[in-house]
Image 1 (cartoon, rainbow, N blue to C red):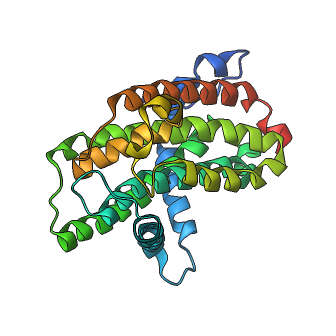
Image 2 (cartoon, rainbow, N blue to C red; image 1 turned 30 degrees about the vertical axis):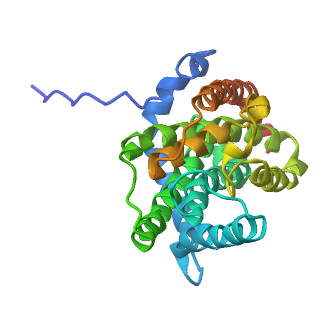
Length: 281
């Protein structure tokens, strides 16, 4: 009597069936979850490969920007922080989410084009690629927090107890970057010249977002309009958590609505265009 053959693991069998990909898309995201780690780790290594100071760029860039903004807005424009924290701390607390958002947007918008060979040869949910780019920017955010700790010590300013709520605002920053990044990624695949517009969007957004100044300088009459920028509520939330500054909750609620709309629009448009990515790339 021959030994029974071991049962084969059929969890990774590829079955070609009409409509199967659509039905199992979100389940496939979980099945291919290791790709998030693999692609994110690869992006981190590639970003700092053959650089002179490597990951220190995650510290130097926001630090230099904070110094410039502090000089321009505090010393030259004579703006003041309505809270108790030093002006440089206020600026850097706003720089943390903005730096994450701008990096995530720039990286994710070009992620599909940068992985053209992978997309045209292997099946997996394409949403993993821009998502891994946003996750990579989270690593930079974590490294930048080293400066925040140093500034707390330098200015003898202890963090607010509100810091326990910081993960909530980090999650909102992630969802905002992910939603907008998905939409721009899909547009960039179809219209290649759109990649030249994205840096302008990021640069313009820096000046209309309260990074170098407090959003409290915006009058109540126009605050609802200004809060249509989803990063306003997120930056106010970071300052509330890290410094104990005033939190404009109406702006925060508006930001949640706008972030939800961007997330829905990004996922909808990305899924709509996903079947054409291999042809367009």
